[in-house]
Image (cartoon, chains in turn orange, yellow, blue):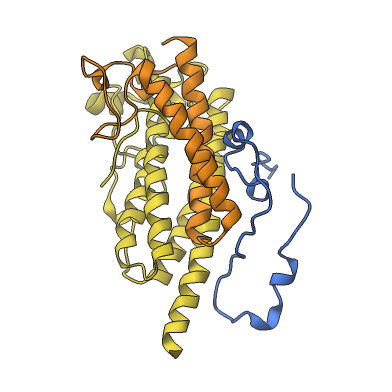
Length: 85
Length: 190
Length: 57
């Protein structure tokens, strides 16, 4: 796995983590406009990063959420537990 | 439904193989206060939660716990990678190796198999949320014990991340408890 | 870590009933930037409560 793939993956983890923590906050504070604004901001950033990553390295999600180049890239190694960070 | 993402929530790494630590870490895979218990507990309790907010909190935290389950599995997998059988045997994993080789299985550090008896779904939101808050504290305590059991800075780093998540989850369950109680009291009077 | 405590006045005692557990509702104050948040394990500075290590017993 090349260094660029690792660093893109780590960037996605960072932004997604911020989304997760804001998501849980919004679950108990659904009317917090500032938090929702921040959530939407990072969510938008996350989709762009994921799209970029998937173009080079194959789908992060299946079941129709992402498309794949030929041949079906989902089956490619490495899987998450096999990656050395 | 659920959709898998082909990535970890956190870049879990180990600095070197360590059979003893793998044996201890299994506690958070298939032990009573581990991530499988957490994920399945919240997932099944959510159906009778009285408010949308409470259903959201249980659904989302259950989902995050599955990501933590994968992180624990990754640490165990990496800690056992390439370790010869003689060392597995010497370091106390002979019994585990007999049944599972270096594969992942839902047992605790003593080999006790995971059981649904570890968890409860009382059908009572207040009782269940107290269990959930206790579960987060027990998992936090377990992570602290695990941090004390290793010298590996890479493993410690991931365990600190997971421990902090227990604190955030406790806060959300606590807020949910107060909100559910308020909701139930408002229903009583109107 | 974190000094400002916006919760002090929330715990006016007369409003609390006996035999009930309470956790104060978090207020939205500030966020760690994403690269720091993942290292801390939370995006919220006021929930960042790191483990200090084993106490001598």
